[in-house]
Image (cartoon, rainbow, N blue to C red; front, side, top):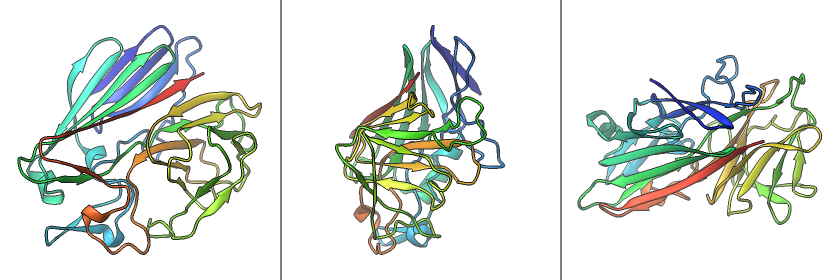
Length: 291
């Protein structure tokens, strides 16, 4: 089911399958900001990553003496959500644990994904409820929105860039061929917070930037003007595109990430993972502003 929200400035479409944001258009000129999910490059637009962000070492995790296989980014993106609230500028979708999810993830939970328009901004809201009566719940959650880049019909994103509200240059990590984070870090040089996209900028894949180094990332055009800004309080985030001539960039606030290549622990020991006591609630949000 496709749900539309709108106000005077933006029209938004959300698919109930995965509670996935599919389209954001300017109502002034019908300009589309979101990637179109062309399978030639990437078949998704803005999946929610839950109960896992990234890949597990060995494609499985250990919990309470058992081994549970799970694919990259978890299962929520491939589940049908129920819409539990809707008006003209807000919608909330819900996913509850069931017999199938319990086979892969042994926790009773409720996950709610909300979208609310205000002016030229869209706030995305996450609510995770641990429905267990006695045991703590371990999870990660993250965003993966893909924005058109270039935006104005240029042949490539070369000359575009991203601007961070970082206080200095930032340290980032890469992943290996198994999707695991390398132990080494590199430095990304910024000029007044700006990194310009060169032809080879994404040749080595995702940039993983940890430790609250920035809380706002903008995509900017060749004149340095921002057209999409993602604001968040997440402890880490990813910047990704599959490289080559793929015409989009993902800005991904995360509460959790893939395993490190040297990781050897259990689910509860995963770096940046979240721990939620019985019957407690985790609530976070991020905001996307369109110019």
